[in-house]
Each structure stands twice: as C-alpha cells, then as structure tokens.
Image 1: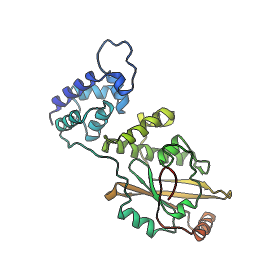
Image 2: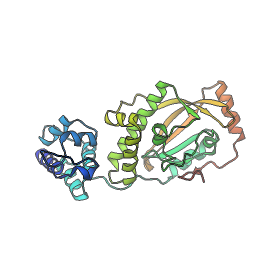
Image 3: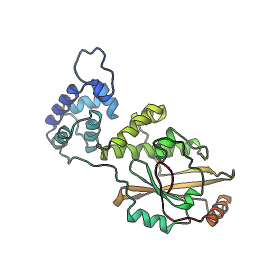
Image 4: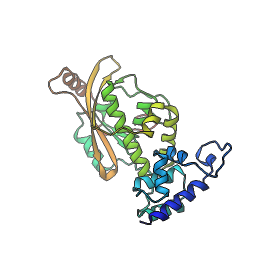
Length: 284
C-alpha cells in the first residue's frame, strides 16, 4: 500500500472540500477546506485517527476508505484513487432489493412462522402472511415507513415494545448493519439520505452512529400487540441470506408457553400467501 500517498491524497481532498458542499456552515475559517474534527465527525472516527491516516501512521481498512470518501462526497475518480492508493478495489452500485430464490424459499418453507426479509439498508422487501397477522406494523405515511431502523429510532410502533436490555441489543444490530451497508454501497444516495435524516431526527441514533456499541447477540425479544389487544412475546433471530445480500428475522415463541399457544391460534387463522412483497404504500 502506498501509505504516504494515501495520506497525502486524503489531506488534499479534505482541504479542497468546501464545508457547505458537505452540509456544514462555511463561517470564518483560518484554513481552507474541512478541519480534521469535521471530517472525523462526518466519517464516524476521531480527529486523531484522521491525523494518523494523513501522516501515514495508520493502515486504513476498506471500510475506512469508503467512510472518508462518502464523508467528503468524493467523486468517482477521487474515490477510485483513494482505493487504489490503499490497495483495495472500489465498491459500487446500489443496495440490492430483489427478493432472490433463497429468501423466497425461506418464506415459503416457514409459512407457519412469522418471517420478515429486509435488504442491507434495513428496508423490508417481503414478509409472509403470518408476520403481517401480528398486526403491529402500522403505516405513518413517512418515506421510510418500511425501514426497520427508521421505525425503531424515528417512528416507533405502538404495538412493539421491548425491555431496555432487548432494545439495546436490537438497536446495536440496526446501527451495525446500516454502517456496514454505507461502507459497501457508498454510491447509494437513498441510503445516504436515510442515514442523514436519521441522524437529524434521532439524537439517540446519532449518538450511536458516532460511537457504535458492539453487537453482543443477534437475538432480542419483543411484545407484539395485535389490534384486538392481545399481546404475544416473541424472540427474533437474524438469519443472513448472503447470496442476495438480504437478511431475515424469524419470530418464535418459547416452547410450551402461553405465547406459543397464542401464536398457534394466529397461525391457524392466517389465510394468505406465503410471500408478500411490501413497499412504501403497504403490502401487495
């Protein structure tokens, strides 16, 4: 890796970036471009780490290269140059949203278990009728009504309640997956807009974005309240679907519990397709 070359290129881009071009006030400045503190804040890292990168004292990962490029809103040529200097291939493209065969089979084979599938940006792509029968997913009329992270931080459901410990685990996973998506798909403007809006709307999300918590477990429990007032407590387990860059959450009740009996009643009353694609206007 041309470490000194990467550091020099990063510093040049930082100093050539007008604050207003990345959403910061210009104000009166003694130096041109962005301050290291500002770049660090935008990229989710410390100013000291930015300094070490520029001085060639730290080896940037591919994720770091993508993060600083996105923070600087670097053009394709500059982004590819940073990647080349750091020794990585440039990422590109949009977050895939197609419901591939793997996810389709999962929904079809577990039609009697609530399952929801979402993309790398946490947008729900599809669910089965059993998941929709939980009746907790209301629509608020927002652009990101079907985004799991948006609903958790900015537009929570009345029919979805978690303990403090479970909410901590759940939110840690959401932030980690969004951060990973931003690094893999730096050219996806919709994803960037989602993150920017969430950081503006939710101080809790912004704080975790700046200082993400480590993911301890990929499972959490929640109480789902249906329209008839009945509540079921279910555990959600995350299942990766790597070929399509999708993920699924499967909801189950504790064996032999009252919730298991209630869930069986819900499943028995379901009369709908195994695969329901969803979108901004609702299922269909």
